[in-house]
Length: 129
Image (cartoon, rainbow, N blue to C red; front, side, top):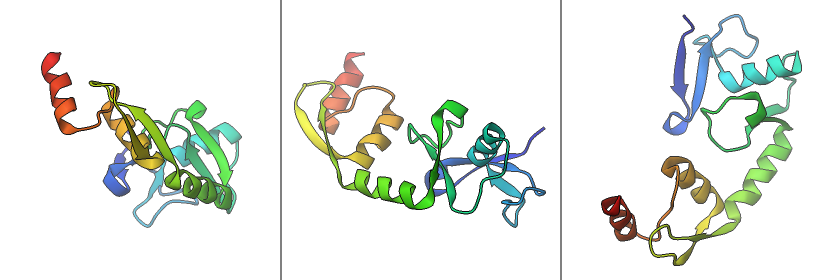
């Protein structure tokens, strides 16, 4: 059975025990998304290459969700996203509110549905179900 752990800030990523891998940490683990991308490419990642999760879900390591980028491009794109604002409609009252792009993606991934402008709107929706 394959040994797996969850790692990174808020256990965002999956790592697999592969002590023989060139990118293995001192503990013998490698990020699963790296292994999936390498299998897709048929080669090891080169220096300066990183794997991006298109949906920002670090547990979703399906090949179609992963994208190979240079480290500099990946960093630049995330820096742009972090500064952008997203206009969102409340899932209960329909009122519009703004969230920073990274906050929106993080909440959307956790919510698996509607986002709310306030805790009271979220509670009302929860009690109506």
